[in-house]
Amino acid sequence: MRDIFSCVSLKLLSPMNVFYVTGLIVANIFFNVVANIGFKFSAESTTLRGFLIWQVLGNLAGLITVITLTLLLRFLPLHIAFPVTTGLSLLCVQVLAAGLFFGETITSVQWLGTLLIVCGVVLVWRR
Image 1: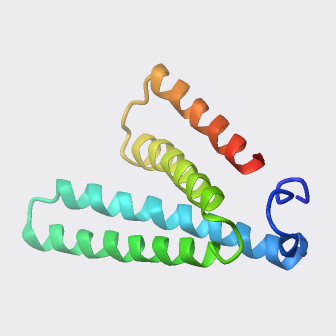
Image 2: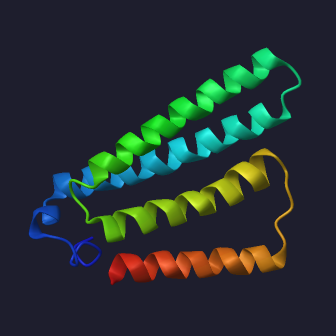
């Protein structure tokens, strides 16, 4: 783990901070996926009540996503935290929410794009 955080300040080398940063990244991605699932259900809702319930859920999950990013910025610079969380969230929304949860087809060109995003996240993270 030390190599991953070598581009960031030395305070990240403590095991507790590494655990905290990892937890914030995972929470950010999780709530981003939940928010997008909520918005998809909202879009497909046939009733006003269903639409509003899913909107509230999606927006609450989105709020938690913003809070986790804000807390993450205490430990990582913006130029690392934002692309990493955004890139990984995009991948998880595409693969988990769209692919597995909603059964949407992911084409080979989209898988290639996914691979390129993974490469970009790794390059940004490692600098």
